[in-house]
Length: 89
Image 1 (tube, one colour):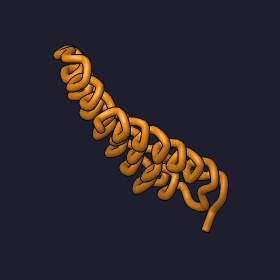
Image 2 (spheres, one colour):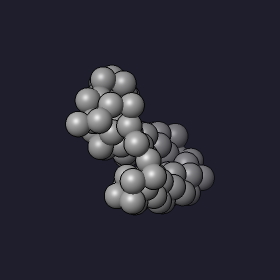
Image 3 (cartoon, helix red, strand yellow):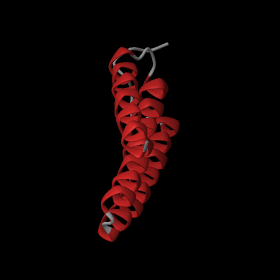
């Protein structure tokens, strides 16, 4: 059952990667990358529970913090106008 959840999360992450490529705006792309990061974090926690590896929980916490910081930095750069997308709306 847990393996099925992990596989479903990976499949949904690839759908979000398609959204990252498709756009249409830079904000959509940043949100899609953030969702992929969240799905990867949940998958790491599921794999930790399957295999009983505690170090994967630590890696998931660090990955979650990095995902949060990068998203905040990217939105701040968009807000100040220093980060522009390929297309303007």
